[in-house]
Image (cartoon, rainbow, N blue to C red; front, side):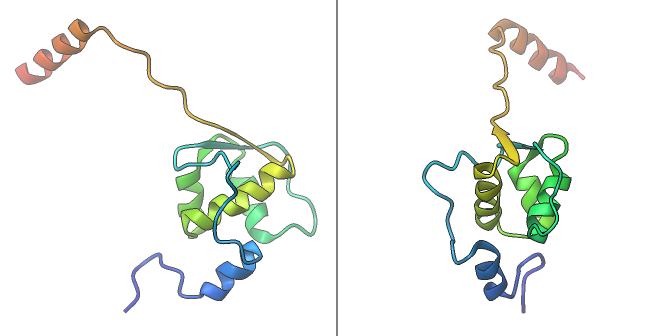
Length: 115
């Protein structure tokens, strides 16, 4: 019995990445990295690359792209690495939340408990 969302064709994944199973050491992608398309798809591009460029018209997390493509995150990172090297996407990490005053956080917590 196969699990939902699991690709039962490992040879397809091998073909998609040209046999690469991991992204390079200089690959900046993790699950929450935001990816933005920097160009439109070009004729003759691999269909998964085209799909990524279309999905990433607006900042989209790597994990969301993998889910939409129905591919493992590791394979998605390899594909993104190809697009990044070609200058077709840019990657950035989400901004960290500002450090809040602990007193304000405590007041919010007290307020929530009083609800």
